[in-house]
Length: 232
Image (tube, rainbow, N blue to C red):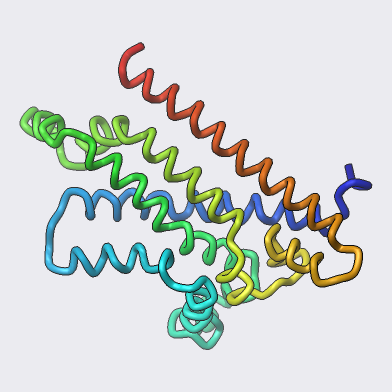
């Protein structure tokens, strides 16, 4: 295996999987909450919140990465506080790559979950509330089980997006082997040197295989959850 995949490429693959998984797990609770707010409430600033959520989809990734650097870099208004108080920084660390991936994947995550929530009949939630269930309990016992296929779909979309993230990542945390070099940035590095086409092509194949595996797994899980909800 190591003859086929160089240590540098193997490290980039492992880092990409870790970054993508952390990005999805960290953003999932926030994504569910934001999707619920957008789907069930109307308030001043609703359109603004919706626009901010989807902003990474329409901004050039390099712009998003630069904004992250301005915000979470050591001299950024959030990053400076994190560094001064906790000695922690996102910039040029693998955690920064996870943050960039989470930001870029967040719109896809929220959209899939929001569509799932909007497909749930509000009368089901109202019926549970009339029986004395609190809002959190209604969500946990009624809404969440019904939207679980949408949550899975959103999580897989976010994971795939995180695996393929390039522009924001390389702008925010650079391309440091073993620290911030993910699959896309490793492919880019291989393409910049003579004889790098072969390793780059192998990483492209791995990227495609991981993405397809994630999609197949999500389809299987979504179908199982849907059958369980239907009582079959």
